[in-house]
Structures are given as C-alpha cells and as structure tokens.
Image 1 (tube, rainbow, N blue to C red):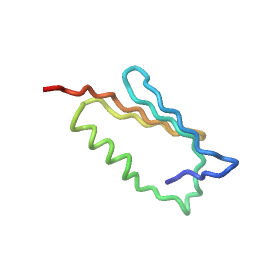
Image 2 (tube, rainbow, N blue to C red):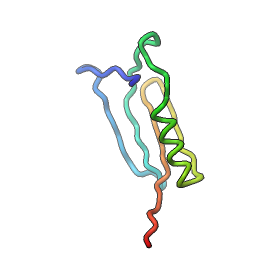
Image 3 (cartoon, rainbow, N blue to C red):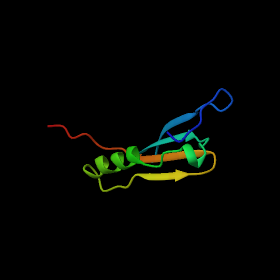
Image 4 (cartoon, helix red, strand yellow):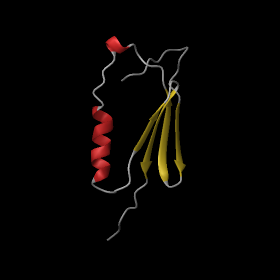
Length: 79
C-alpha cells in the first residue's frame, strides 16, 4: 500500500456509478519513495481480469491528493 493513513490523514473512499462505469476515488497521502513498494500487482491483476470480459479499458488517474480508478460495468448474461 502506498498510502499513509493516520488520525490526521484518514483514508477517504468514494464509490459511484458514472456513465455506466464503477468509479472509485480515494484520498492519497503517499509514503516516501524509500519505503514505498511500486509493484502495481493489484492494478495489473484487475486489468488482466477485466480484459477477459470486455474491450473497454480500465482507467487510472493519480493526482497529488487522490487516486481514481474507473472500471466498465459488465452485464451479466443469463441462460
């Protein structure tokens, strides 16, 4: 995890449906580079899993104060 969470810097998470996409936004207080892991394994895993079900891209946006992920909503096929 690259976020520092304290009483003075709580983790804030917003989950919403925007334009038929699941949007997750969380506050970002990054750890100093020397103690932060940059593997990105979780994000890579989600991208690979979604690619099996849709051609729509997962989008990522990072600013100084927040991290935003947008995933396409998938329709469930019924038999």
